[in-house]
Image (tube, rainbow, N blue to C red):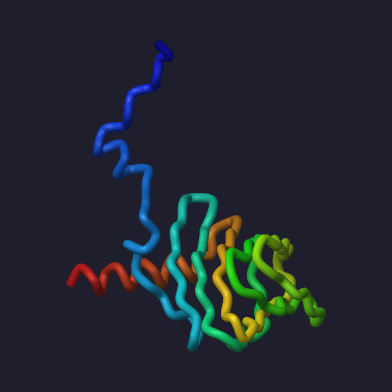
Length: 133
């Protein structure tokens, strides 16, 4: 019989596993919903955009990886459009202006930031404080 590793205890599980939908829902822009999970070195944002939502170009120090799960968008990077569909992955270097326009189908994507987006982490902490009150 094959030897298997033991299952984690409930405490160990609780320290390492996060169900992202149990984190505070953030609305960073009208028509956009984000769930944030962050560690010391990475922030991950689970994003849903309603159809035809425009995210104004902006920039930040963390590098960004965009993974399209469903729907489509025209991502704007340095003033150029990149049409993204399910399965596409876009790499955005540090401090490069970028934005987004979701398609008529809307968009579900995962964004990964390194180092963490301190602004998102701070907003999430504020939301958690409000929930605990």
